[in-house]
Image (cartoon, rainbow, N blue to C red):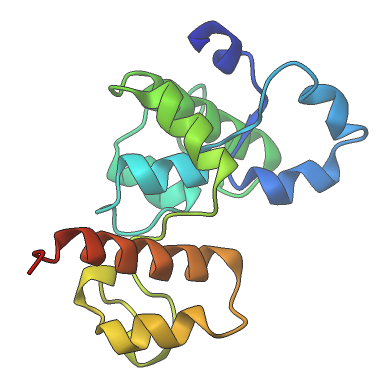
Length: 159
């Protein structure tokens, strides 16, 4: 299982990157894609941000051959993504987390909008989370609100 997952195509924000590939279905014929952004959200939820360059500096990734090359160029982004992927492989249970992350919406560490923007999901009131679940938000935000409500329901003492 781990060997097959390492043969998976990998990209930071893979859903976006797939659109640029001719015939991306060929790349995932044998293995699922690995989204290093979604995996980073699960592996390092307390990182200041989960953009590729922020993770590069936060995790002090070794980027070769030219660490001074300008960011956001295709080759440099590939090198940073490869370095990030190697770092992920060194983490415990990383393959399982990467595959789980690809199958589900992103597990955002903080609220990304509104009056609770920047707060951890655990710090958002129940009624606001319930309101979010009734709105037409993107899958990531709704998933996070539902996950937090489910976690709180499990923690409620049975009376």
